[in-house]
Image (cartoon, rainbow, N blue to C red; front, side, top):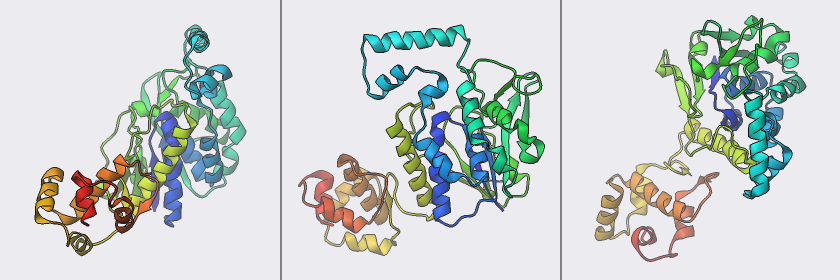
Length: 343
């Protein structure tokens, strides 16, 4: 059996739908999903077979509205405005936050209610689990769907997501709960204990306790190759980029593609030795010293990526080294460009 463990990390959770779509593209069938915090919401949707709806949610998510920010504040923040009106609006929202002793969870409850995940989850053959911490006795709870009554599902997902920024309220059976990340932010072990032979663990590199894996040989860890931004990021373009980043990071790992800061099609060492056949000895030695490697493959890829960063190449593509060379050759005649001109 193959499982998917989804970490907590607020709005960074958009990365995880990109990961799932890449796994699906590679024909990797996931038998069970487990998550912490936002990962529990994503896991519940994916275990229900509702990946298309989840993608649409992340492509249109309004983070500010979920936290109770006014439409005016959200609009002006998205337009990067900074004026007196924005400051006043922000102060007003801050006063509401202080007066209510935290953000309201009403919007999150409404989202869960509208999705009605229980309707599809309990008819699915996929495993689903989450992690939360019962505050009254600080007891961590690992719960699978067989442990959760359908009518309580939304409450348990909310409990798994309960960060201290929210107004402290009793959720289930008269108890307070804390975000599962306070005990286990990447709950892959829950699936390992159930006998899963392979678990993809999706790390959002957010604050939270990361438990040692019970068996590292059965874990394939996927983490962002670039920064995902704040866990409360309101910028939709950034969120959409994070979805694509999850997709391409996963393709790179699953297909074992080449590259460090970009993604390249796989070629053997002979290919890179051939590319270097016309490079002068002096230039080659300079580049080997500059990039601190004598490995032909590493040298060429690092040189290409160096220039690709300068030229603002998109990360969201699988590149052919030859085509990149042809595209950037002869643009400049010094430094790393000179080296690439000789390839």
